[in-house]
Image 1 (cartoon, rainbow, N blue to C red):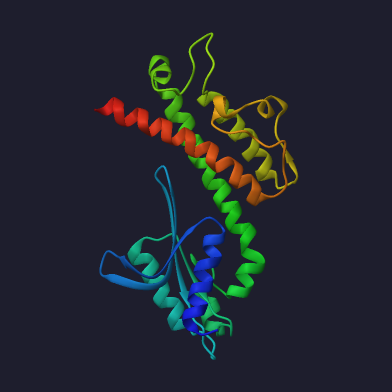
Image 2: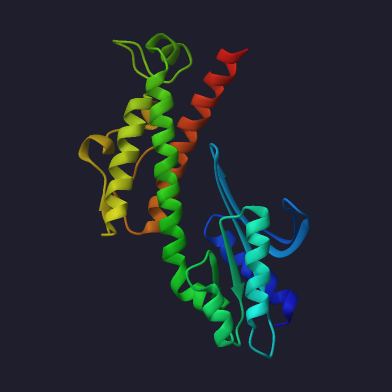
Length: 235
């Protein structure tokens, strides 16, 4: 593996977790532009997460100066986190410079072994934030508007229910945050269908990754309906 392969392998790993990852990216800061090895992003309904990944595929250990440089880039660009990946380790000064900051020093091998769960957990918390945004927007809309734009059915009718989608999402995410698998869906929610919430929920979810692949489409359908409604109401 050469440096470019290492960079592409890092981007591939973050994509496998459902995040956007762009190599050789340019990021505009307050003071100047910055070229970064890998730019990782996640964006849903106004919730943005941006990480800068620097890949140091070197024979020597990474020094304190490189950590300080990344800290400056993270500060200038306002990104959430900076990560330096290096397979041959870090000098003690580099580790000290990263301590208690939003810059992390690790290796791609270590990230693959230990960070997958951390990142997926972060994405679940992000999904919860998105769902709470949906819940707030949903209940701030008048009932007749929700009916008009397909966010709920009228009394005596059948169809999509934003309320049921929110309750199903809250049930699943709450269970997922406990970290005990398999997660079973509520008996009532198991009876929900594509007609009522846009998709059919499985009876059992066996991992955090499976939970995200179930919850995120549920939220995306609701987000799209809410955003469509808001856009049309503003016109």
